[in-house]
Image (cartoon, rainbow, N blue to C red):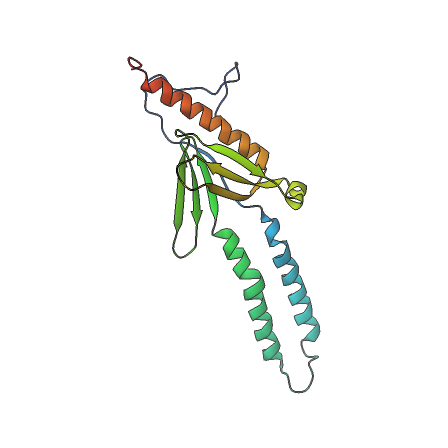
Length: 179
């Protein structure tokens, strides 16, 4: 997830004044553990529908059962899946991008060059799954929250490395005579 490393352990840097192309470091979604209840609901709905098909009391018919099962699947399975699918996080060597929404997209960006603090919050279940919530705060804009990040420690290290490299490059390029 990080940039190539030289023998000294520091990430390779371009020569002074050279343009740096934007490279993808990581792209991920929130941890899929939130879909556990949806999966269990789908299994229960399928099992109940199979059991009650052709075994319904007199006033009910099979089509009513199928419509009710379809409505439950839509409400308990499809909607949570689309909600999970609609949010994605992208880390490049220049910025962090949060994309949210299916129909109308909301995009929030935070540049590594400006620098920001990284706070990690992990609940009990998040610790069991290796996930966590990262809050990125640069002191000027509203904090950027990356919720239920899988492998949160690895993402935290990657973000810290990217901030360090970008600040070194920005400082070096700002020096007079660096070109």
